[in-house]
Length: 233
Image (tube, rainbow, N blue to C red):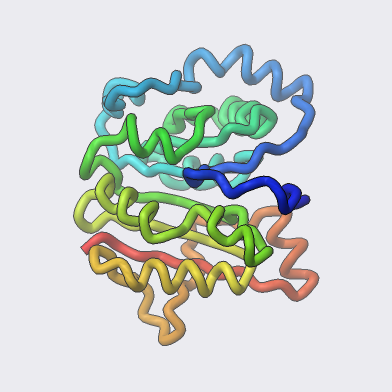
């Protein structure tokens, strides 16, 4: 990803996304038209009543930034008893996930096409989340841009307030310096405990998380992937 010019100041608030260019395909556009009214929720500065929008009471998992939705659809399919609230601002990605949902006949996903940081602050109530998925967040490679990274202590504290006791947060990244940063941030949060028994602090890839096409390509090139799973104490 091309970094912004050096003269542009850092944002005052962290966002969960980076604006990307992309074209919505015919199939994605059709999914947006046909399934969007049912499964895409409007952003509002008001608490979300999950049982109402999903039509049932079930464990609620928040996903922050689902890309093109391949992994999200897979996880929702193998975990039908969970509800998945998924945030992504990129319209082709929203259309792609809706298309997956139609093809797999999934009904346990709701989408918010909005910044997850604002969703977390204004729509989710304390102790409402059973889990959080953050897969491959932007690592902001350059040192001067590290403050733009999503996984930082203030954000984790805000996330923790929305998590039930015993709820988990699962982060995955393919950038080792960011993995080390995330591990440090999560370890320093006293309200979280590492769910992994491994000495290095990282977790084995949970069975529910599939390998993405991007991840498979990286692994073939010798790149690593680091999973981290922590639970609220």
